[in-house]
Image 1 (cartoon, rainbow, N blue to C red):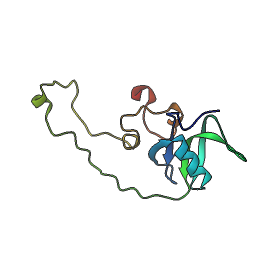
Image 2: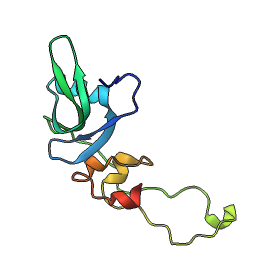
Image 3: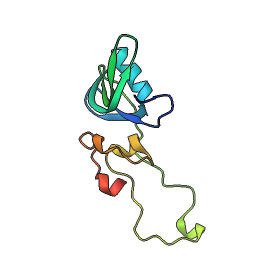
Amino acid sequence: MPDIRRTAAAALVLNATYEPLCVVSVRRAAILILSAKAICVADGDGVLHSARNSLPVPSVVRLTRYVRVPYRTHVGLGDRTPAELGWRLHAAPAAPKGSAWRVLGHRAPDPRWADWLDVELSAAC
């Protein structure tokens, strides 16, 4: 039985329209499911048990109500140029594409999230 208080496992949260929103802990995902604010879309490894219920560990959850999230359309690339830092770039910098960068940031995606994120998992790991 997994101990969700000590694990670093995470769950992907999707909007009601299956748009990726964020990554939360398994504990927060279980609370969203138990409070009927989300539905489990994909199960992870293991089962969570309580005195009366058992719940598969959620890997991907979808919110039952749509949440409007105002995203910035432009991402700043930093306050100093590479030349000022004494660096040479192998490729020209570009703004991130797709919605996965907003959700994951620097985190490596779970392979079970591939259906909901438009990112190649082999390149992101």
